[in-house]
Image (cartoon, rainbow, N blue to C red; front, side):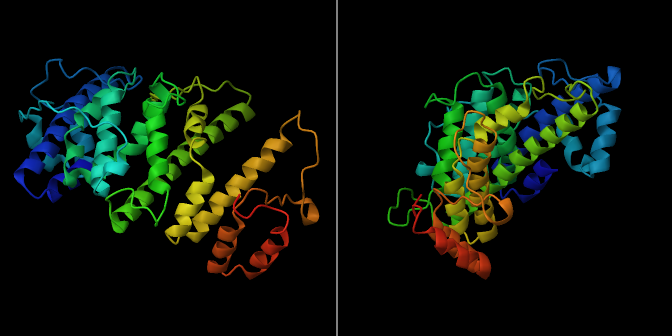
Length: 346
């Protein structure tokens, strides 16, 4: 559906051809998947597109496309013969600092991650490769927004390189997200306009929310299975590494993103409730680490009624501003009581 929408919004034939190629290649992959699924209904396996294609689209795929309301649009591409010759190599990072627009940033980052995924043991790499032309046209911006969370998760699940390696795809992802979220009005470190910068920030927040939601669902499923006293197994049609918890992989990603940076960026965008949530998450992570650390010796500060109320290391100036914007007068009036004993700038 995303590709069909992009195809319809393409402004010229060149952009349409790039979207059409992606649809053509995905139809081949989906047809292989439909054949495999109806044969034994086992784990979804994306086969190599070099296999000889059938002249007739699989009935199961036809039914699915018709149910989605896109069959009439995509069916002509089943017999099309678009070809793509990749002559130009992807740009090297950094991407955001060199970008002139939100689309340019999204496209460059996704293209980089797609090419890197081809060297991994990722079962999704053929899917990503099929979309490599769609992400290079402005009409395919929604495709890049759809793929980015998947590409990030795929990188952290299947890339063997360490996030501590500054040249690894994992480190590149962390650096790019941090660059987008950093606001410094005194330095024009990029040619991107304020409006395009805001679009990039919104996209990053959406990515963070999406990946966090995936992690929460996985942890919840693990808890339910454990509560039933059974062994947690990978779902039958899943390609993600459930044996080595996907939550651990996601944590490697989320722990690389500073919650304080997220809070400041959200505050700059006027997302005060979101900024407050990020500061609260930062506080909870600090206090919780002490509660569950058996080697910690000391007293965990507590507030009225035994509630945890530590404000150490938090930018209280931003906290006061956000509470004021949200009209939380009572909470705002309590913050200055801690300002004498804690560092305002964290």
